[in-house]
Each structure stands twice: as C-alpha cells, then as structure tokens.
Image 1 (cartoon, rainbow over the protein chains, first blue to last red):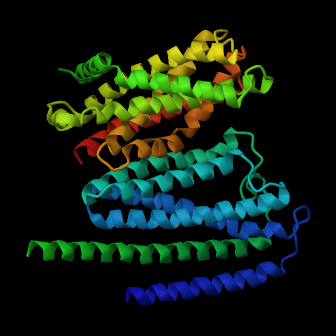
Image 2 (cartoon, rainbow over the protein chains, first blue to last red):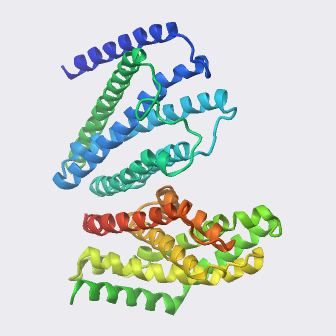
Image 3 (cartoon, chains in turn red, cyan):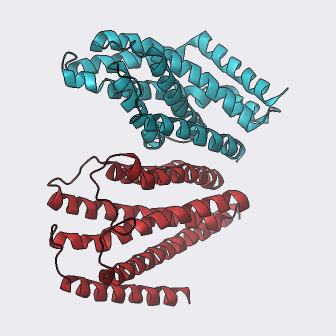
Length: 224
Length: 226
C-alpha cells in the first residue's frame, strides 16, 4: 500500500514539474538578468525543501531523545540525507546563476558561506553516524549533534541581514519585485520539490527499516 | 556540595593533571609556534595586507592549537576507565561538563596568551594598543571554542578517528564566532576600537556563547549517560 502511495505521489510530482517547466519556458526573460533568472523557480524551492528537511530532522532528533524510539532515528537520518542532497542542488543552481550574473561561480558572501557551512554541518552528522558502531549510542549522539547543527540554521537565515552581502535580497518578502502572475509556477515547483523530498525520505526510511530488520535477524541467528 | 563547587573540583582536578604532565599545553603551544612559522613563509609580515588579516591568522592558530587541548579533554579519562568512574560519581553530568569546560578554557587561554606576543613579534603587529577590548574578544571567542570543543570531545571520545572527527565537527559550527573574533581582532590589533558597525560581531560572540553554553549544559547528561 505504502509503495503504491509513493508511486502515485512520484507520478504527481513529475506531472507538476513537466507542466511547470513548459510554462516557465514560455515566460518572458527578466529585463536585467535574461533567461538565467528563471533558475529562481528551482533554486528557492530547493532551498525551502532543504530547510524543511533540517526542521524535520530536528523534530525527529528531539523525539528520539525523548522517546528512544528508533523510528525517529531512522527518520532523522533519512531526512538529513535527502536535505543534504537538496542543499547541494541549491548550491549548484546558485553557482550557475552566479557564474552568469556575477561572473564567478563562487562569491564568498554571507549567504553562500552559511549555506556551505550548513552543508558541512549536516555532512558532519552523517560522518559522525558512520564512525559510531553501537546503534543506541549512534542514535543518541547523532540526535544531539543534529540539535547543535540546527541552531546554526537561523544564522543562515538572518545572516543576510547581519552582513553586507552580494546575494540578491529576497524578491518575495519586503519590497520584492517578483511578478505575482509568476507566483503560481513558483508555488507549484515548491510543492513538487517538497513532494520529491518526501518520496526520497520515505524510500530511504524504508531502507533503514529493512536494515534494522536484517540486523535483528542476524542477531537472532547468532543467538541460536 | 553545590553544583558550582562540584564543577570547581573537576576544574582543579583537570588542571592539576595537566600541570603534572603538561602534555596538552606543551604540544598545543609547540603546534601554534609551527603554524606561526609556516605563516611567515606564506605571508610577508611587512605587507599591509598581512596586517589587515592579522586577526584571521591569529584565530586560525588559536583554533588549530585549541583543538589539541580539547581533544585531550575526555580522552585523558579513557585509561583505567576513569571516564566511567567520573560518570558514576555522585555529581551531575552538567557539573562534570562545566568543570572540564572551565579547565579547558584556562588552558586554551594560556596557550593563546603565550602565542599572542610571539605572533606580535613574528608578524610585526603592535597588538597591545586596544588591550582591554582585545582581551574581551579573546575571552568570548575562546569560551565559544571551548564550550563546543568540550561537548564534542565528549561526543567523539569513544569513536573511531577521534582526532579527525573533532575538528571536522567543531569548525563548521564554530564559523560564526570565529568570523566575529577574526573581524574584531583584525581591527583591534590595528589600533581601531570596536565601533558601532563592528559591535554586531560582539553580539554574535555573546549570543553564540550564551546559546551553546545553555544547550550544552542541557544535553550533556544525554551524551555522557546515553
């Protein structure tokens, strides 16, 4: 049943994406930036999905520490891995845009730096997990680390206000200039990205569950 | 025995153990010297640009040298199962952590205060011009470094590749306070006091220290006991 729901959601996400891409290709180019502006339709939804993943990882980590239920640990690692992939997509799309507009792939401005810091943080989370053998200790330490890492995330969001920065100011909030007629495509893309993120997470979660079952059977076989 | 007294006992114990062997402080200071020496080849100390990034160089030295001390903090307790005995002792995990953090802070500050004049001589920097403010930045930056380093030292004490994992985990988290400390220190050693446009970095340092001290004290019991 869960498989069928996942397939259904996946098909839905792909349909949304195809529909969006066709429409976005038909939109006129931005006056100053040209066609590369349209990367925002992917760059920002991917970033929001990555942030959502970080928030879910935090909640799952706290729930694990409170309940000691390993389902939450599996969810935390699944969603962190997916979030890391989305953040990587965010960094790559941002670099492509920067190459065209700034002339360089990477400018060390505050938001780029903070996004990279977050990526390294959550990569550290996965490295920490790999380094610990014992499951309970691994889950506990990883949960604690995830909480520490998440506290860094607000710094990412507010850093754009703290530092003078080359990153364009958000065009959606606070006097932005994003045309309201284009907003539906953006929002549908956001829905599609969140859906894809959810599907990846669910798939990864099932792998974790299978792994746990395998571990259990292996222990059982050893004890006999 | 009150909470602070318990923490104080741990601090004294750690400092006494360190002063008897001096292994962490000596290696840390020697390492700082080596990095300063390497910097002298990488950067011409009479160039104006080197003067401008003095704060950055200094904090890289502090971060590298500090890691050596912090790495030893909980690893020192591994032989003879001392860590298990400490955890089993009738004191809270938070007191144990705070005691160790304060001891580490004192050791890190000691290495920094010895490295600072050496850095001043090697890099031709007159670092004493804004001495009180520089000390404030040093204390705030070092405390942030120490608190993160100590809790992660507890986190990584039992795992494979401990020496590699600690800097890999701490440096990304430490980037905001290190940036702040670097910015402020560069200005202060050049003789300019903290101005309204740089005071935000002081706030970053203070905010970071307060938030992570609170979170660490809250979560350390979970880390130590599981």
